[in-house]
Length: 232
Image (cartoon, rainbow, N blue to C red; front, side):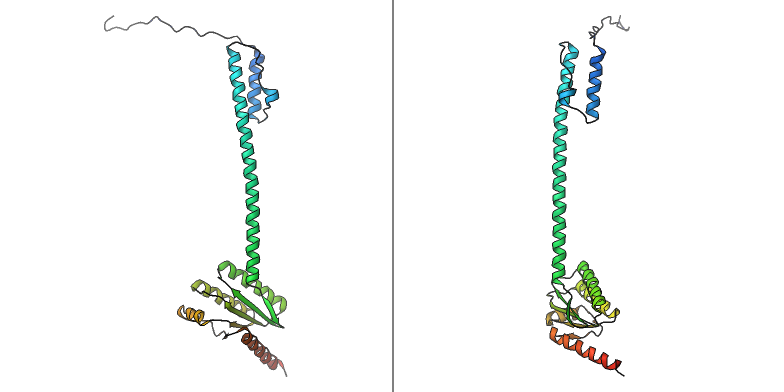
């Protein structure tokens, strides 16, 4: 009717009902449960396809889904295992590299006992904060073990000095003096000496000599004076 409500008596056809036995539904439940618990076994858990009705088509689709999911899960697990192996190999390599670096640092900065009561610390290469800390710790340990009274810090192998490096050297010198050892610096090239002067580095009266031999002579002289003072 005009201006009125048009009624529609047409109805969609009722969907066709499918009769399904309870055990078939229970098997689907069991299959999905095995998947969720990561216990799916294709040989044992797939649905039997013994029916050709519409529910059978659904069972077949569920089986395909389960198989595809199983393949994906297996590939994912394999990828995780490979990544874990790669991670362990990388950690081993990093450990080896760090051990090699530590060995190189030890070899490049050995604390050498030149004579009774006299230790030498020849420094080669660049000195950063970490290496400076290790040098200080190693030197203090050796001074304590050897009961050394003199330390020669040899800078022959140092080619570059900046503000940070100079600060590390000052820490090293101050540490040796704090434990009561006589400290001498040797091998200070004119270029390094000039750079330290420009940086305003004050060695605090620490003797600076040309060669390690000169440093050893200075230590002998210091030990001789100390012995003379102790003599009655």
